[in-house]
Length: 253
Image 1 (cartoon, rainbow, N blue to C red):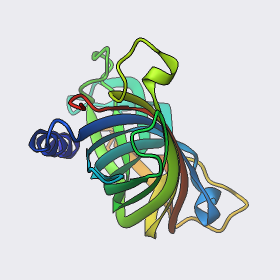
Image 2: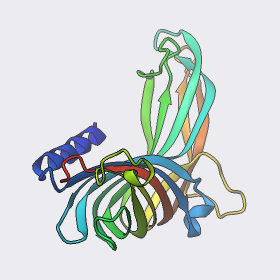
Image 3: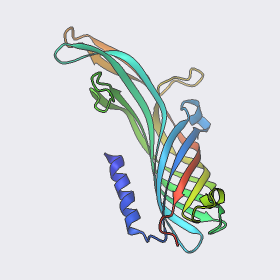
Image 4: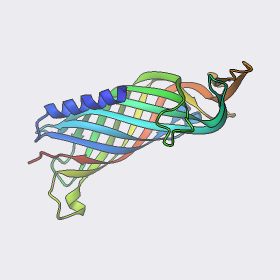
């Protein structure tokens, strides 16, 4: 629900901008933890949405929402309903990152078909691990039997990097110029100390902050079965992000 609200805010911002200066885009993201974070976190894959306003000078400013997943684990467990019936189902644990940024870019060759730029972002990052117990009768797992947040933390974050935009017309000569661009970029992201969960333990590293256990209760025998789902670690936010995406400037003239 919070993600939907943020997307609606981005759309409202876009609606308020002039059509001739407005641009929006989406990217595929590959984020690689570095430093101490790389010892206990996997690489993250995700998507981003951005809405920005271009100025007459070679600058743009806007907002960005991005999502990444750095781990997903499924195990089979017996689940006992309140009426005493038992079913075997999937227990899914998903490790996710959400970012909300204010963004700014400085273009080095304004209005050129190949346009390199420098980029800076500042905002907030959320690390969330969610558990969902699938309903065996729900084919698409849209409505889990039970869901819970196992770990959640957040921190300020900022990012700097560089990229290049390539006009679609450079590759597809029949297309109108300065409406669609390929966008490639790399960013270094830093932030404060944050807690995050991982489903696997690195035995070569110090003891994790805590183990995370999920309890399954047999309502007939009242026996509690604990299922281990991961470990919580603590480190400074430090990642390198690679992006490939598409930018659209629908009203450019």
